[in-house]
Image 1 (cartoon, rainbow, N blue to C red):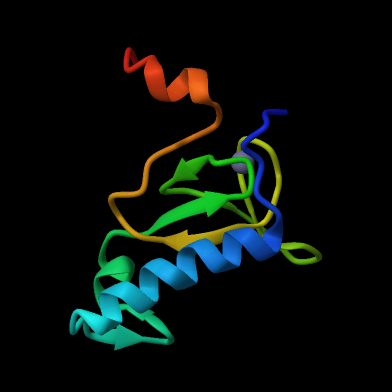
Image 2: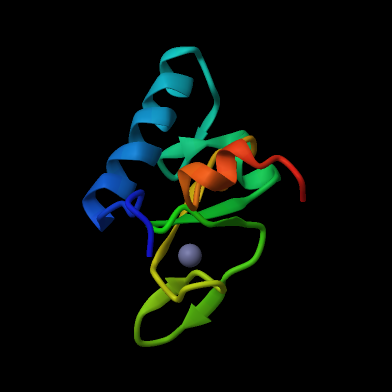
Length: 92
Ligand SMILES: [Zn+2]
């Protein structure tokens, strides 16, 4: 675990704020999110993992494949931020 972990509420606020910004800029919306997010879907969890895939769970909803925390649809340019060290280290 890292110091960067977001609570579910923070996760919701994060994607909502980004969605609101794009909507204010005139983005086409679908189901409360910018249309373009669905064209290139990425999923963010509270541990900062971003993936184009997630695990569908009947009991717990949509989960991160890396850590099994709930995921939210996020914007296509979002990047992983699992720790400060990962952001500095750009080698992949
Ligand atoms: Zn995760």
